[in-house]
View 1 (cartoon, rainbow, N blue to C red):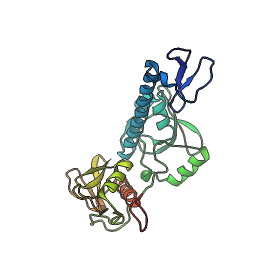
View 2: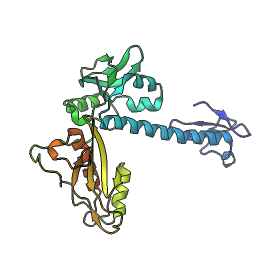
View 3: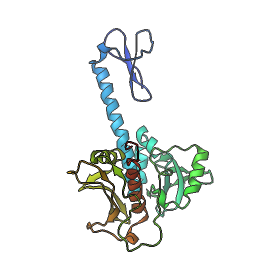
View 4: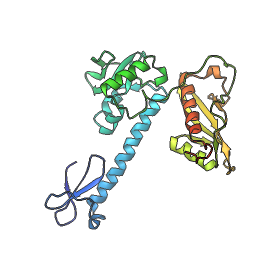
Length: 285
């Protein structure tokens, strides 16, 4: 960002590459900090507000794209093209694995042009154009070539802001189709409920009615994974409970009716909360 004059005395301020306000004096020497006397300057205050907005904007871009992936939502190619000029959007979308409307893997997203379509690098290393009206950002559990894509991503030096290729995935095991709960990550003990609720918040999971929940839209239906974490009126030691999934009407689903994305995201939530448990002789993570 260009330097802008602030206050008196020839000071100039700007935003660095990390979004922080920096300052230089009239001689052009970069100062370690912004002088206190410039703290209330309208230009400095404006830059700080801009920094806050940019941070919130990047976070919203990341959350939106992750929601598209987790909920298997079709994304109009025109939307990708329209936001590509925005650096925050471009950083989040670049290098994600995208597919066409038919679900066939196209490759790593590298560019977007209104006339030529979306530019992707396929598994052969070739740059091709995807011209479908809609694309998908598939959840990694749906990618049959996940291991090959991970290996190729390492060769390309791909770094994804949205956890896609390196997101932990769980595949539903055979059997137990009629069962309604999973206890693999039950019994994760916490010294206090607030510690478990705090971990839910840090990992981005909402808590409702004593359950940590994560909604997933799969095959057009909303399925919610639910893990018991404790009642708000309980303040002492608590532990994680069993994991189950509910359908659109709130009824508990047999495990055989839980889709691959809902299963993986539910198990990911349960594993993440279980990992923070208090172990013998240690404080909870």
